[in-house]
Length: 142
Image 1 (cartoon, rainbow, N blue to C red):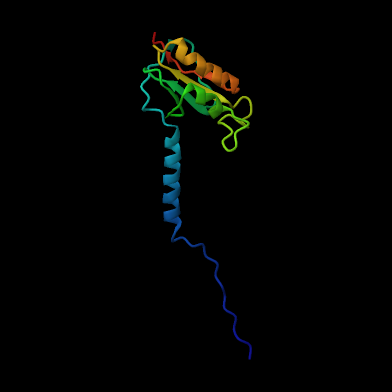
Image 2 (image 1 turned 120 degrees about the horizontal axis):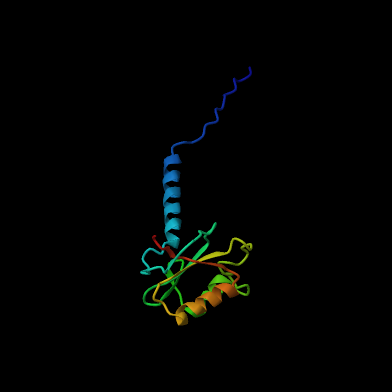
């Protein structure tokens, strides 16, 4: 006598969907805060006829105390170049390594009272790494 076959119903387990969505939300919030540089105290210089860059990959800021930051993290002028471009590095090749030209945008935020001795090494390091500088200014109000 043949035994009746049981029908298997394929269902998507939806019990853990809420947990997975919550964990993904936390993950993306943490990643979004990684480039936060709102704690840096700087006042932009002013300019007229300003344009916005199409992409933003990296942010370099110099605050009112002439301290340099890379994506919100304090960094020395000597460490800035290798952090941007380090083809000989064992692990970290640099933030601009393997990034195609045209997408190497570096936002440069310099406090309006910063002197050349502090921002010229930053400009040299970004240029040597192949970064495309966009100086962040405040548009003058008419």
